[in-house]
Length: 119
Image 1: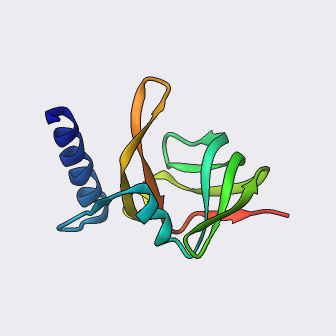
Image 2: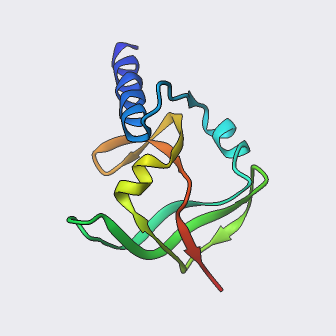
Image 3: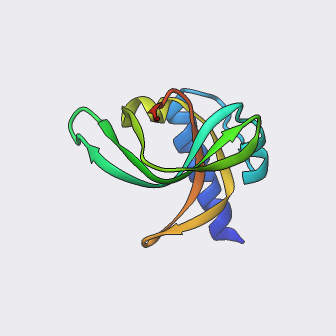
């Protein structure tokens, strides 16, 4: 479909610009997950973002722990912090699949360098 092709090209351009890369691969969600050694898939976040400097912090209200490419267990109430502008530079992958979030259809995005703290 033409709309999906344009959308994928736009995402590739965003990723290339953010990372300064000459090529950004868009892959299937399952492959994106399989490449993560240790991480958290955030489904729901509650927190704040500073619109000036991009710092964000909050709590993962719904998510899953990922180890060696597999979803291990659900997590919640895990603290998360980082910077939006730095995160754009640290995008390591985008999924082909889209999920409807409010009025937008967005890909899964893998980002490196986000800080998580949990008990």
